[in-house]
Image (cartoon, rainbow, N blue to C red; front, side, top):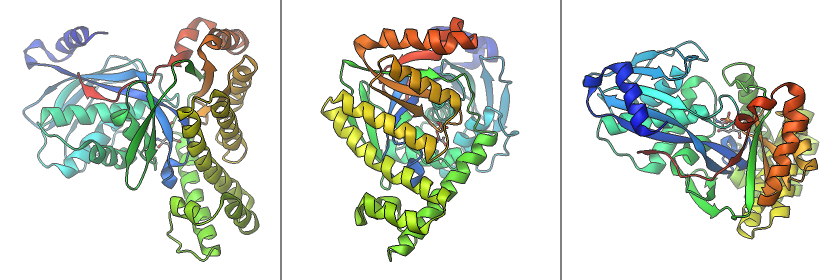
Length: 399
Ligand code: NG1
């Protein structure tokens, strides 16, 4: 839908006397590599998608905020913008807007609210950050409505913390890439201090995203499993640091700088329980893969990048235990059909895979996924929505 169409629907929802309507676009993201390590403070390598959340809004004179979603599955939501906003029941989409509003209200007092109409072409609970896109869109709308500008890096950090309002102990990758992505590039994101370093995606590489048909609902059991892993990583880090005679609060990047991966793995092997050792092995090997993948991208070495994707998937499946049989099957089929590499992307527990193909191979891989994955599951008709080529896009903006 164009901005003009969206504005017309806005007038139907809120009345045409509302005054000028602005539109924010906030893209989803696909993480290429560096999974489940942002909350360990280690670099990750995502890019933004063409698909986005779009929010048409008009400033209000008071602090109220009213939200209407064009998707009828999501009921209208309303709240007052202040520094302590009561949450709607877990799983309510409006909580992502509340998360942004509360985070901004804690930083800027006396904010006015907005009337907002939301639409999205991002698949939901597919590991592509539709939720963080809504957080960012809402934040940009409120900032615009109140005439406030915030430095981009500060806003990324503010919203990274702010989204924890919904109960997940996320690491900040999503809000950073959604705000800071550069068109035609993937970006390495470093944390503490936060910074983004873009690298161009070669013109003959194509990243395919394919949904497993399994929703990765972060408001349900996946949230518990996610938060459990953040605690396990912290516990493993503390025990390894102690064993190495380091301070117990030494962060992962400093630990990796102080010892080789082999040394760290050996310490983990002999001093941690089986589960903690596996979690730790994923984190430190994935951290290494991100650096190697960034180098492979810069060198346009597709085969090397593909192998790193495969290794990342095995590590997420076996050591981190966040994969799902349907994700494993998609990865396997994509590889058999000629992808250079493939892995689950996002938090896992369902959601999507990302596969790297040389451009001319893409149609074959898509056909194989349609015939061998979606058709047997009765989902061939919707295949255009389930599988798509990821176009590295620019970050969020008021359009
Ligand atoms: P998704 O895929 O959107 O559930 C989550 C976290 C990220 C990161 C990834 C795993 C949030 C908002 N996002 O993403 O920070 O930890 O999992 O790499 O919590």
